Image 1 (cartoon, helix red, strand yellow):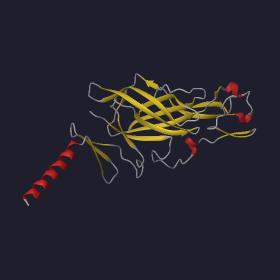
Image 2 (cartoon, one colour; image 1 turned 135 degrees about the horizontal axis):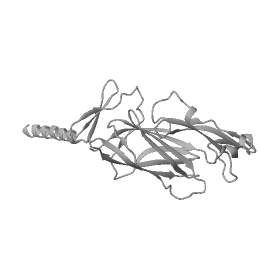
Image 3 (cartoon, helix red, strand yellow; image 1 turned 45 degrees about the horizontal axis):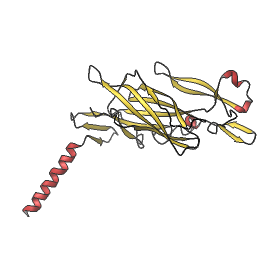
Image 4 (cartoon, one colour; image 1 turned 90 degrees about the vertical axis):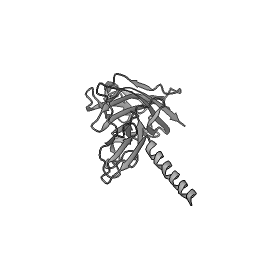
Length: 262
């Protein structure tokens, strides 16, 4: 009997120890507010409140971990599956706030017909965390590994428990000028307002003209083709399922709860 009591006490102590040593614990209360408790300071802080099912498909990111490349986006275009990985380089300011100063991004193609590459990345501060636009584009003649993208001179404050939202934007394969578009047949080109951040972090529209074929590759992501008949496609990223706000339910968007080791 004594041995049984000793075993039970030891098991309880082991479980308590495991719970205490957990680096991060997440609790979920009735109003869908996630609470995070960190081992280092036992500090509790609250993430933004979410509507029902908004974070049903999401993940976490340890934003000050530079020992590895962390996944921030995964998508499929031109029959090619690919993923974008990132490293964020942070510093503490005079008030000990964590600030992202630099960031690096790499794109990895999987089983691709046409390789995809990073054209540009924009990263800004938002009310609830960090917003990022990742512009990708088909690289028809390029068969090597994507060269990636590096952002310097950033000053983006980290909101622990906030949200990192990444939006993948696919750019047309064959971008042309407005002047060049005038020499194209009506259905051989199209135009569309793509959304960018300006220098103040405000979303602006930028009208881009693009053609279906450059006599080398046909842009199947933006145009349909049946013999000599060509028509532009509807922009699914901006038009489909506008009522579905839950992050991660479309390959365009990914949401991560921001964690930090200090």
